[in-house]
Length: 77
Image (cartoon, rainbow, N blue to C red):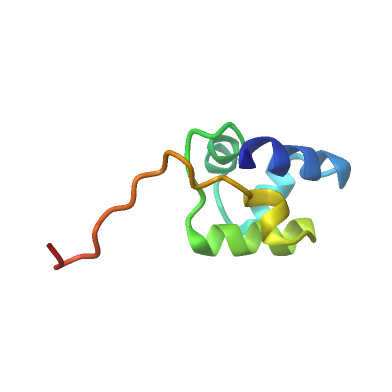
């Protein structure tokens, strides 16, 4: 589950939520929601988290798509 992996890695690096939020260019409440599993990180944020935390994407997001509903692309039915 991604929420614990992000928080655990952030803490391993000694980063606060505020510091990591600044590094990935999101508001602290947004990062908090991602860590708690209340919000699923969009692709750009996923890449930023991977870069900031220095780990492969699979180590943060393995199995993280479960239960996430995809929306159809705009203009498609």
